[in-house]
Length: 120
Image 1: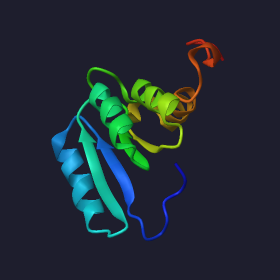
Image 2: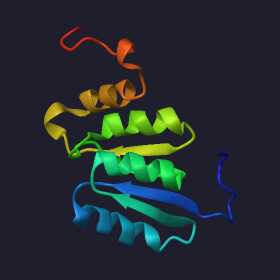
Image 3: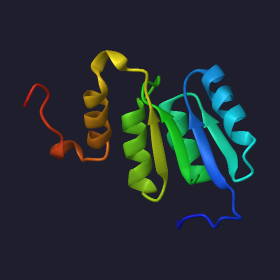
Image 4: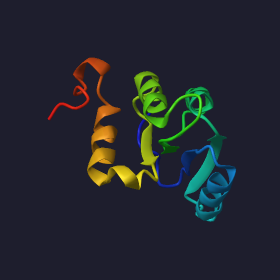
């Protein structure tokens, strides 16, 4: 899938296990005529199913999800539909920003290429 034309609304999928968070993002985005919310999911498995069916241009994905976390859901979606862009959400402040960046890089790598936990 190529980049959407300017007159074509950007198809967005929202993924978060908290309905209130999804509603908040929807309210912020739906006023923009260049954006169209095409799907919402409350867990990782549902996110994979909906993403592969709806093929949004962008997925706003929570990292901490029930049934399947956001990293695994993202890997599965990108394996089948690499053209989909994503924005990861997380409230994992306790780990610090460096850990979140490492996790984001790792979710794009095959398992065999990921660093061993505890390794420098």
